[in-house]
Image (cartoon, rainbow, N blue to C red; front, side, top):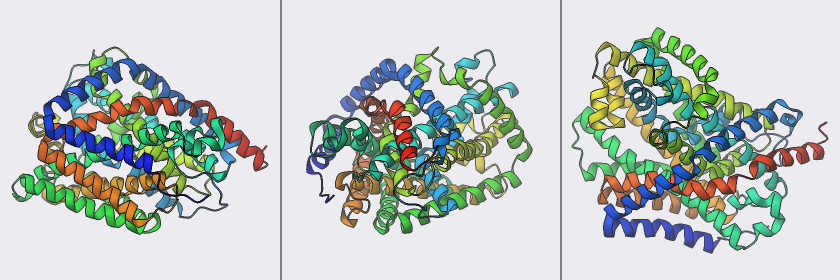
Length: 502
């Protein structure tokens, strides 16, 4: 199938980003107010749907993994392109890397200082609060978050790919509409556009946020003034890394950065365990995971405090749902030749365990130091935000300055990895090619960095507004994703039949 640049999708998705920037330049306050209004509407009217949807995706994925359909080989190859470690590294660093560094330090502390409402009988900032704080963090970055991004969506995507369809978001509706959805159609254009705008907003926001937070960390650590120039230089360096990585492709730059990130993060975890409160971290992880599993449905379906939910779990659910179509395409692209069971085991078991342990190493250390010296982490977090919490935690360790500097490096590279993979995936979606032109890949990396830079110049509120906007974009994306609940089992059954699996 000869694929060319899809100009309607390119123009509408790019135009939406330009419109957001122009509107922010004209009146940033009005844009922020409008996004806040839409954000509240999205979480109020779709929050319960998202909560049920996330649990159903996980439950169906778990069922498929342990069934005979787990033996289905995905894609069009008999063997994978990459070894297991490189493959896992790309999955881990792409799906959650952009948020998993800063939030790993901040979220457990937030919940420790203000007990999650479902555990309202536990007083805040007490020893008994450690377990609920970590259990809530595990929910937000655990089984459900990973399942929606890399399981059922990837299966439907890879079924379409096995039938010769190009890797575009509209491929999710291929089992319903057939090849006509893959041609120029209004519905197909809308599906692609919604998915691209959602993932672009979800990537540009963290890029801008990183520029602001990394500049804060550089000021705190090295005395480099936290100015607009510093913030823009950080974004420029990040985009340079992302553009080079996207240009060199999946099997070179993206794979190299992913492997570097995972190894670097593992080394940092070991160092913190050796120099920090290792016993507290391990005990807290085991106990909190027990509570997380025991109270899983209670946490997942909690509806008591809608304002709190919209700021925490529903914000994350909207973010992850907005990413899901493009993440599914990327996971499909790198998982050719893997079995369904291999993919699901990696995405809904291994990756959440790794992420949750990472949260305990970083956030658990923060809780430990906050217990020993109240205000030592909570104070900086309240005054300086997420980046301040990382510095406040690791600088209390031996060799704290060097560990903090290492965190600055790994954070920049983590976000760069998300930016390069999303640039690559957006390019695949617009061109329909598994290996899109280098110029298109670089263009999307540069344009996302440029938009982030403009928003930083306008003001931090514009960056925050764009981060919140992905929750608004999750509304149409969640409706696009709804059919995967029955399509994924159906196409898994078809693939099993085609492959003679009984």
